[in-house]
Image (cartoon, rainbow, N blue to C red):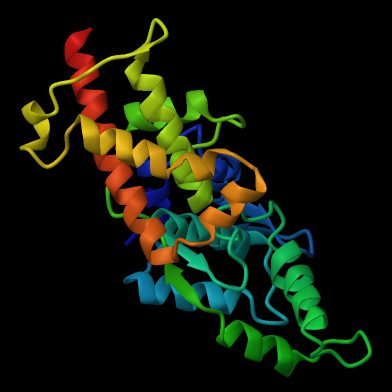
Length: 262
């Protein structure tokens, strides 16, 4: 797997990681911390699989590792690849989705702050062995749904999102809220909800009643009342992941049927 080719094949302007595009494009000549210019070959950004990508991420986070120059590009590419593959780090759930421009902000500062928060420091100082141990025990979890969000559908999510976020850059609760919002956005025309012939694409597995019931259950993710927040907590992570997959199936069916009507 060539991570650089993977990045340029999949990256979209709407994605957070797009901000690193210029740096990655110009990675053939990068100055290191000593001001020396280094030549970097494209084939140096190759990995075998997910396991090797995770191993590389851990290596970049080890104390004493210089995360400038070539390693900075590695950090951008590995975080994008793991995020695109649906992975999160339990201890730092947003780092793969929104890595800092300067990797040092995470590999040193955030890791150090977490160790201090956990009370594993020595009067404010963090030993190398403690950082090494924390990095070695980071928990990588595959959280993303397995249903592909097409470019045209992702653009719909971006349009209705309050902060114009791509679907894969949302938290899971936000995904459920935006799925419900998009269903309403697609079905509500001239102030009224249209009825679609779901059997044309859903083979009898989804009908109008199913869509209404799904929207009803997702209302708690759209509102911030105490009751809504309490209801959200009744769903497990596994249930939320299922509801994302199921909701995307509904959205894709509605999107196709609405397009045929236009």
